[in-house]
Length: 235
Image (cartoon, rainbow, N blue to C red; front, side, top):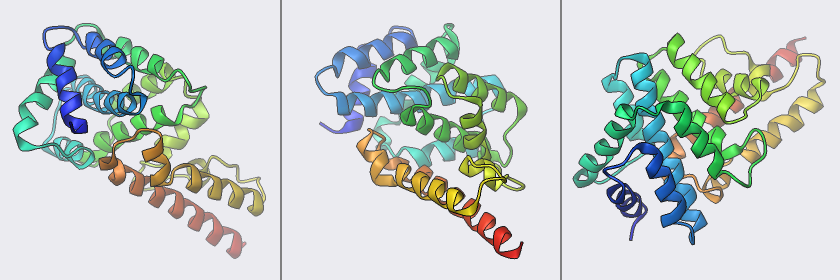
């Protein structure tokens, strides 16, 4: 059975319940398969929180839908099932806070600044900026998600900086200070490249379709490092 079939079966078994029940289904249905559970939890997170973010912003643009499809490719005959979960999330009176808290609780092996939850935030940023601008309500939504995920303010700002189309601070992208010497910055850069390599994402349960975000993230890290290197050479 494919990854999407397992996911949609879990959705089908809880179709009449609130979104929080979907999270409980993920925990129980895939209890003996932690790898699949991580993948299902991640996918539901992107679908559900995207729906909540769209509701917060009040507008669902065609570009946002396209951005979602860039992250997840699903069979056309399953589109109605995915839309069903999306609408369930959008209509759930529990709100996104309750869902994000339950999702965060699934990452029982993670400490603060969990890399899996950072992947979720990157996916949400990708969708939020699809129309060319991250609106204030979207940014506030994402910031609150980061707080629920126990993401430090510094880490959140580092993630956000990767998604600024122009004028982004390269030091913030790498999580370093302008006062740091270049060898320190270089070590930090290589550490981030290793941490966020696509193979690492796969090993922590991120679906393979997420390579779009992985490539985007690596491009931001490379551009930031190149900008700092150019600046230091010119100094």
